[in-house]
Length: 322
Ligand code: UDP
Image (cartoon, rainbow, N blue to C red; front, side, top):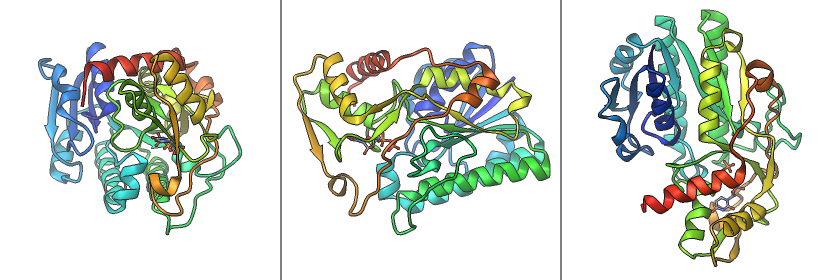
């Protein structure tokens, strides 16, 4: 099988490309290196079944050509990271909406299957935890730029479902929940690599707000395993599926666990949200995935627990000083 991975030089895309090559597929990736990097895929470029194009997914003729020669499109390319979203809202909205529109349109024309990456951000500040796929989305006002990410991804989902219903495009919408692991960078705000790096450098771990807010983390290797099963499952087409974990941990506890596992002498410092992001920033109090649908469809359960996620990410950060 030949697979096109948009955003293939990113954290998740590079792991996916690796797994596809390992099972014998031919892999094309396209990435504009805005948040991805050549360092993530350098080790793959020697493989004759790996092909990389450094360009934007907004380049329509190029996307037409790439989609034409593949059997499956995994659309991961997006502006991600809360910090990036708050700092560059125009880029977030335009990449996420126009990019996905192009990817879906090309795939529909050629009737190619699509796996669309969406996000648990779409649930917004709903307090009905865990979040199930048919729950209401509770978003904040448009004057708060954070919500542009959830909104742009929700539009992507609407469009994908519309293509499925009207054009019979085989598409699977996956809502990723806080995916972590090696190659994730803390540059765009993600808590896991940021706190681990701080612990390794002996700096204070910056916990935003009270630290009582929770997240549920899923290891990137587990995510890829789930995606590969979903990609081969006709019953998943036209569905929205949470891909995540239901094990919540508060950020304060996460920071303490990281300090313990890395044997760091660092302390924890609390940073108010308005200092970390922007005035009036709204965070989500709790986030956990209802994984019932994913489990029913695929039998998937996560294999990597939090401690191991921290160890593996810490090992990577030690070996690759940015
Ligand atoms: N966070 C934190 N310290 C950091 C970075 C993030 O306490 O240095 C918090 C952030 O405010 C949020 C949680 O960790 O409550 C997860 O943030 P992240 O940006 O990783 O993901 P998301 O908010 O999209 O779940």
